[in-house]
Length: 386
Ligand SMILES: Cc1ncc(COP(=O)(O)O)c(C=O)c1O
Image (cartoon, rainbow, N blue to C red; front, side, top):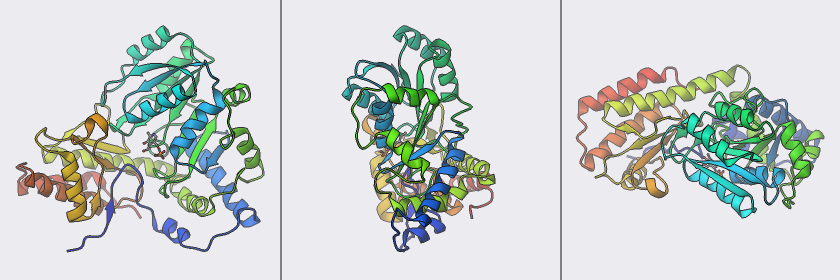
């Protein structure tokens, strides 16, 4: 039997039909009124998604480009920052800071553990006034959600001038994150996540304080000079050539993330997470993270099973892609994404086939357990996505 391809990774993610349709149309030139209109619509929609009155810049890069732009635009060599590191992406941001000769205090969070806010506050006090605090909202490598609004409030209480930078790459659009209300100075995002379009665009928004820091920053920049991008945005342009098809795809996808659909997307993503947890529980699987994210679930397998093999077999035998673990979690966990155009049937199919594959690796999941898992999963899922 050939099964249809199913993608349940924490990015890239499956795309809705209207995005697929736009991607296959003839390309336009970017300096045209028609494209400027599309870009203007995207700028308006992105502000809604970020919940900010600030401009949200569209960069042609993956999410890491926006992470780097956040550093190079607001910091200077010799500045001190405080980096929350609870997985691979926290490590990445800290490494970037070091590369730019920024003095980096690391606040290590045990992988998969929730953040202890009093320990965080104590460590921040000990670090002394820092130019910025950097954290993921969801640390995708461990599928862990960090309470960034509380973390930002603590940082501002201690050091009112500190910039709080949030990597919201797997959180924006599917968590409560609201840039202005939560007092977050820099939010970065990536297209291949909740935006449901391919990899290749990143987004960044900055507060007034961050824009002030942008003027003072002494790190050299060229492609990611955000002042130039902001100026271009005012005339509904991007500074360099626009990634036209991606931006048109973004315009097609944004209605799913804005207006009444904003709350619906949050709800749908939470349902996919709860359904995954409920199903996993019935087949005896353990959720890895102490503070699970709605965007991705990590399942910790029995130490006798190599999760890479399970992942590979799901792909080769059943045409479904999920992710394994990275670094010290390689072979230990499976990560199931809840972002993008995921149908109820995709998740039910995955749960069933995961049980089949796990049984081949020595698990003893009974037919009754599988049926109960599917039932529990279905009960949480509710109405399918349109
Ligand atoms: C939390 C987080 N930060 C950063 C990145 C890096 O993004 P990109 O691969 O688009 O550069 C990812 C990618 O999965 C992520 O999940």
